[in-house]
Length: 531
Image (cartoon, rainbow, N blue to C red; front, side, top):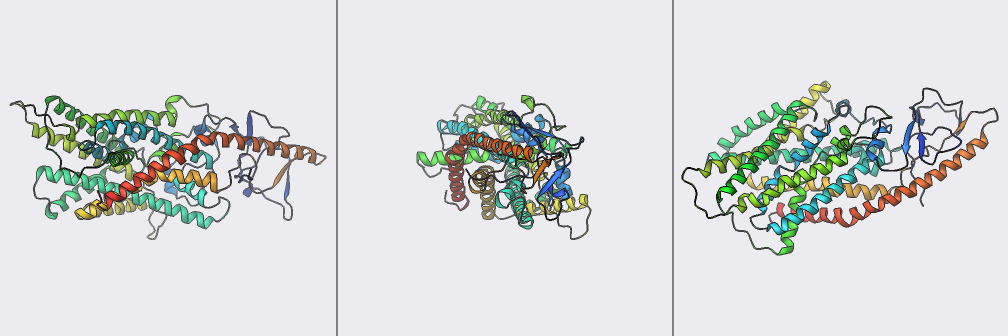
């Protein structure tokens, strides 16, 4: 077995180690301890009484609590704005709200149109399978964060590409590239949300959809979105807009069910070229995977999985991110399954309409609510946009955040005003980047961390410095005994970690990565107009 890569921290000099728990590290890191030149062995005269010890359980049943209780190393590249954004917590109800709202946006609209040429007998099994795949992907994200003891996507990626102890400049470049990719993806998504809402609104209430009418409406929408923006996911404006988005989708679903009960028929969609069964399954899988994409897994996990104290008790089931993820997928299935049967593509009843009922008003209301549910989710996406560290004009942190948010909003507005052909490319690119970030990237990180890089050590310090107990006789016997016990304990824990990882290796190699790659192929073909 290869030698593990050692993580920062040093151990307490116990002469024996319990088989059920391992104690690690006081408050300081080894780099802050003054060393004697020319020596590699330090003698610590006893452990200070004020030292704080962290208890690490051998069983991996509560990874979230372990990640939260570990002393995470501070990253010197993090801006003050980023550190403040991670200093708050969210309740499980708010976490569930943000996750469920992700499944009722653009992917839900694409799913409702999918039924026009794909049978529900194909869509329903694919929906259930994709929900399980999404749950597995969420667990891969959580395990990656626990493995590297970081809850930031930029840090997880940087640890996989550049060693944590070396190449600080390369780490900074990698983190900046990851943040830039996240900004680009979310800005594209928001521009697609704006464009979708504008197209629907203008086509419903006006036949003139030229720039003379599109520009002022787009600017008005941008100003409204700016007023609803917040600095974090805890902002009341962001919470309110997300709740409005989910409420609009629910009302649209109820109205569609009402139309279905009345036997109202929708206009038949344009006929598409007949496709094979394999292509329909491929198309359904790609669209449903996109419907379950979310940029909130690690941001929400970071603000939910942080207990108030180091020695906090195990979380309740309702406070577990895994339990919230399961509930998110169950509620999403409940909200998405009716689309298969009451969507515009499914409403083709030939029943005569009642004289006293005007279907056009309800149909327009449904279309408006569905589009507004998409665009109302913009503030939640913009709230997780990182603020670049660049401060060329000398702004304060708050002013710099406002300036950058205004710049991002201006870019979204310009993209939303692009031509029809460019808009199709931007929509496909946003879908492509979302699928990469939600399904392909966690698989690549899992493979890199566990197959390319050396395994992270659990007990042994990184710098090879030997810490001994202070004793009148020098403590060499105790030191050798402690070193041997630590190494045996390290090997045992590494073997147990490898055994627990086998299931996730199978899920990554045989399920998540192939499905993610296949969805990228379909999305790329859609982006270039192949189908």
